Length: 262
Image 1 (tube, rainbow, N blue to C red):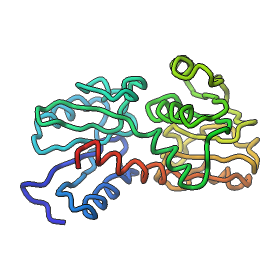
Image 2 (image 1 turned 180 degrees about the horizontal axis):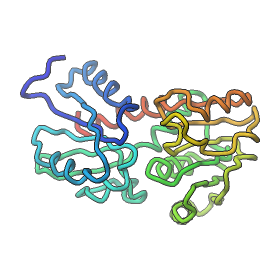
Image 3 (image 1 turned 120 degrees about the vertical axis):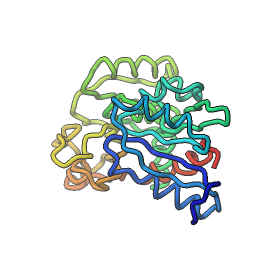
């Protein structure tokens, strides 16, 4: 694929950036479909976020950009327009820059996660779920699990206020779904999900108590690098079925490309 003056530019912003797999996937997809576009990683700290987004606004050949940890909530506030899901969750993970320079945000984490489960033969409908996290990705996954028909959902988060705020929003959207707040013990749940960034760095603490995990449980990650986090290693040692983070990304790539108009 040759980059020319006509090539559309896409970006992914994150902090850290080394673990991202989206550029490889989007660039492969563009090559396969003959789209004249390229995605590059952009390492952006929180203090520089607004400056970088303002720079993106001035780039007339920018198709859009993908957002990941820790910017999903902050970037949502910088958009001109949000999809219904993104507005409800107050977070985005992909943005299209329209010809007039406006930013249109959407969030695809939840849809990608559930599609990834189903691709691996794991149907969330009717299962009880334990979800660690209450940020942008976790919120999207919580709504997607509710939409998919989980029997009940437990939210666990270091900051109880954020978990309670998410619980209230879910209760309004899905009043028939039992949603509760939990601690670090995922006992009694069919599906255990880490939707935090714990596991990205070597030496990170485990996001939950693994001692009580049993072989009947499914333990899922959203982290793609490392592919096998400390949580997944511990879950495998307990005989659990594990779900890696990559299927979630694979199922988002096409949606991301479509959102950015590629």
